[in-house]
Picture 1 (spheres, rainbow, N blue to C red):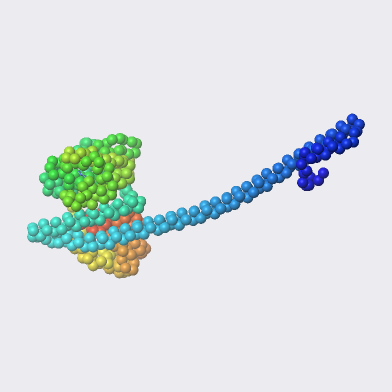
Picture 2: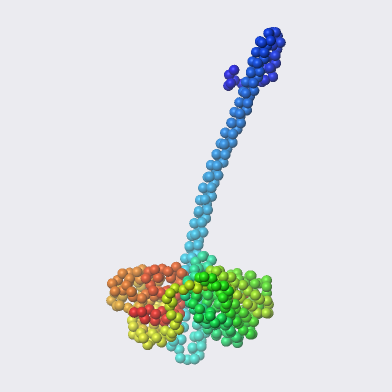
Length: 473
Ligand SMILES: Nc1ncnc2c1ncn2[C@@H]1O[C@H](COP(=O)(O)OP(=O)(O)OP(=O)(O)O)[C@@H](O)[C@H]1O
Ligand SMILES: [Mg+2]
């Protein structure tokens, strides 16, 4: 029987064989043989039918496999497509982030440059003013300018934190000095409000040296204590510090600022730590501010490995606390903390010493000339990098103050070229710039500058830096 042929159905076959058997009577052995043959035929037919069923299943399986292969191919294509879409979205987000960062650093620069002029001119006028009323007016103008600068700094800080660009700058510092400075900086506001201010510092802590970002720690303390003074009409503000936990390489410190002020309703305790949130945001509110202080504190505290919170009720004063993890392993040689009158020391020790200012902005030139001349130093001015290099070739300046953004050759490139000039490898170069992001500071140091000072120039900081680097000559 041909296995390829269509199998006849079993019943008619059986019937035909039985009819044959009945029509021709045979011997018993023939009859058995015929029956066996008949059974074999039936069995073969059954096998053929099974074979056909198997072939059908195989065809179905092949079809299913083809479907699966097609599905897999389309899924792979979709994955490739989706990956490309995600990569494009990521590129767009990165580009947006980059343009946000560069917008911020440009804005920071553009805002700081005129502020440098405003504050600088006030500082120069204060140095020259003799009339008591003028000194008072200028003092007020300066405080307003500083307040505006603080707001600019807050907005930039928050943006930096959000863009992930805020890093802590770790160095050794004395805890007592940071707290004392906080109290000194707040003293005028405390006195003006007729409040008491007290500081509670366990004996061992005052002189304790720690590793951390003292500038940012100070910023948190100033905002909390500043808020306490701002929102308290009567009574006082108390600042307490304690060690919560000592580990092998660090310690967890707890700071608490308590006031007897207006207090905060419990439902506002969480909200006030968000950006731009104030307990009273109505137009008729009595207290100034942008509502950024606590949001910045919260993020800075997180960077310091701590937590921040408040206990308060309306009319019952407030107690803001935070913890910070600070290093206790110090580098072997610490810079000696010295409170010196840098201006007086410059006048007595470095009168007539010639330094170079590289600066293109005429107002900044004027401000710095005034400050430097007031310290008894001689100042040459170059308006760009090329002019600075030409001057530095002829004169061995004791120190160079270098702006970063200038037409033509910028400050970084100018410093790099100066360093390759024979005899100028070690001339101290201080960056004096409105570019105040961490990466700007790193770029300055990498280019061989010895220090980075931010504009608007803070005269005491400028004098301390001049004294520090001239003193090494
Ligand atoms: N010591 C306090 N007593 C009462 N309310 C406070 C106190 N500290 C903060 N607040 C409330 O929390 C809000 C947010 O404080 P935050 O320091 O973030 O902003 P601000 O002081 O209003 O403005 P900025 O700090 O940006 O100048 C304040 O506006 C105030 O409503
Ligand atoms: Mg505040």
